[in-house]
Amino acid sequence: MSATYALTVIEEHGARPGLTRFIESVHSMISVVADELDVPESELTVVLTGDITAS
Image (tube, rainbow, N blue to C red; front, side):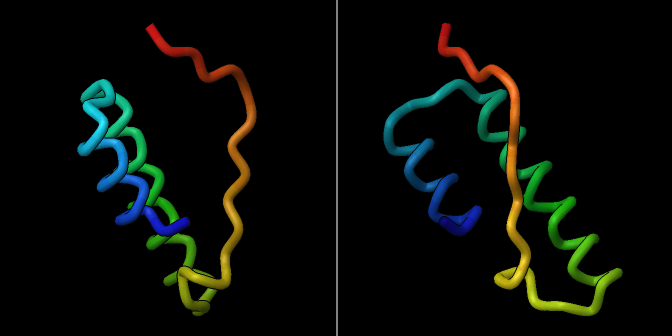
């Protein structure tokens, strides 16, 4: 799933603003890593671990 798609889904379903900022932050980090490795962002796989809870 692309970061743009994820943000669209979150905005449409009214998720917490912090989650939107988190995804934007992750996407920014992916862009930096892709530039450093000289690969397209689409070739990177990001795995998030930990507890994600809704409040």
